[in-house]
Length: 209
Ligand code: SF4
Ligand code: SF4
Image (cartoon, rainbow, N blue to C red):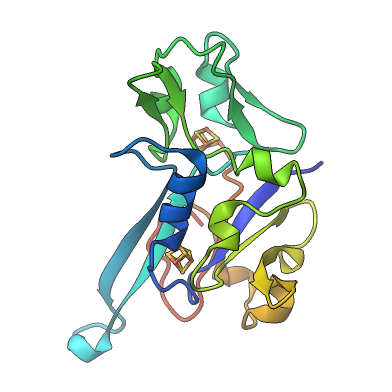
C-alpha cells in the first residue's frame, strides 16, 4: 500500500532552515505558524566526562509525520481530517469546525488553528506538487541535499531528493551507507509515524526508535 513519506539524512542537515522558509512561501503559512520546524538537538557529550571538543549537536526537521494510524483522524468529529490512498493525511477545510481535537491528539504538536479562517492546518506534503509528479518544496529546496521523498512501500534507498544538475539525486546512491540501526522515527504511541530520520555515529535523542 502506498505511503508517501520524507526521509532526512541528519548527518547531511546543516540547519540552514531553507526547508522551513520554502514551506512557508509555497504554502502561504501565516506569520508565527509553521508546517515544518527545524529543532536543534544538543549539544550532547559524545563520551562521559567530555570536554567541549567532545560535544556534538544535530538538527531535526519536524513536520506532520503522515502517520499510518493517525490519532488526529480518529478524534476528528466531522471527518475533516482524513487519510488518502497515497498515505498522506489531509484536512478538508470545508468540513473543519476548528474544534482542535486533532491538534490536541497529535503527539508531535504539528497542527495549529488558522485564526483567520478558523480551520486547522498542517503539512500536506505539498499535495498540489506531488500530484503533478513534483517533489515537496522542502525536499527540492533543501540546502544540505538532506531530504528525500518517496513511497515507504519501496525501500528508502529509492527515495528522491533535489536536482543535481538535471537529475534528481537518489538516497541510496547519494548518501553515505547506513544500517537499519541508523534509521529512526519520532516516539510511536500507536500512531506509526511515517517520516524517517537517518543518524549515524551519534546517539538518537529524538525519542522513539
Ligand atoms: Fe496526525 Fe500528528 Fe500524525 Fe500528522 S503527525 S498524521 S497531525 S497525528
Ligand atoms: Fe536541514 Fe535541508 Fe532543512 Fe537546511 S533545508 S535545515 S539542510 S533539512
